[in-house]
Amino acid sequence: MIRSKRPAILLAAWLLAICCACSSLRPDGPSSVHTRMTKFPTLGSSMSKTLRGLFDKGGDDFRLSLREVRIFRTTSTPWEEIPLEELPPPAESAAEAYVIAARRYCRAWPDEPVLVSANEWYIFREKRLTAYDSRSYRKRCDFVPALEPAQGESIETETHIREWLVENFPEAREPRVVLYAKGIIYAEADRLDVAEQYLMSGDAIPPDDADAAATTMLPGRSLRSGPERLRREVDEDAAREILAGKIEELHPNLVPR
Image (cartoon, rainbow, N blue to C red; front, side, top):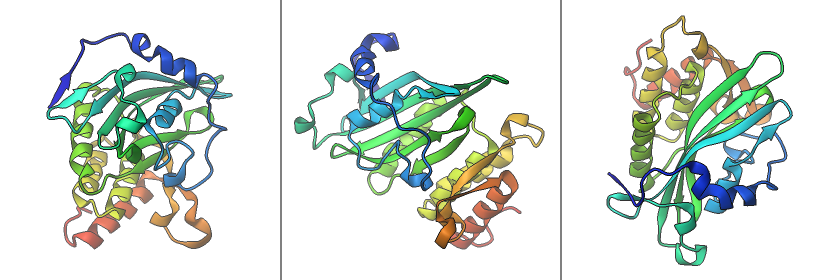
């Protein structure tokens, strides 16, 4: 359950201060490192640094816009939604836990317009980012899934915020190959239940859905060690095969072929 301290307000009204702070803080460009080690987000980052990353404006041929952002204190029961200006100073928040739910758009040009939207979440414990589901955007809104599954006590928080995002922002869609890629990361984290959900979600997309057909970059450790650890581009068939194999390793005779 989530309790809001305020009625819905225009985003700009209560994010003005952070927008001003972010205007001069933009990432250096697309990351070229492992999917879980992108420049944004970064495990261990503070909430303020993560919020600055959410306000990145993009690159030369694409623009990012933050359409929705909600912050919840998860140590309250039910969760308490709080505006940015009421966040406690870092020195007073060590014992608190928070989650950010966001929705970003990416628009590319100049040839054919491309518009991509995604739901994202970021979990903080002891003032530091411990889990997230985000994206690292590159040229013309191409992106790499940036995902760090929650562990331990944060798993319940992750489950809740994923359900909340689906309920409140159901129009955000992801390509089939990205769903499989996320399932691979969850399988590697021994989160079999979520890995299965992503496999079934990808399989449920109609084969002729053009928006679902794409390629993506998978974390190298899902493929092999050594020189290919950084990342490798795969299509949806290859991603599904990798995911199905990993689920079968964890739970033989479970995966539909």
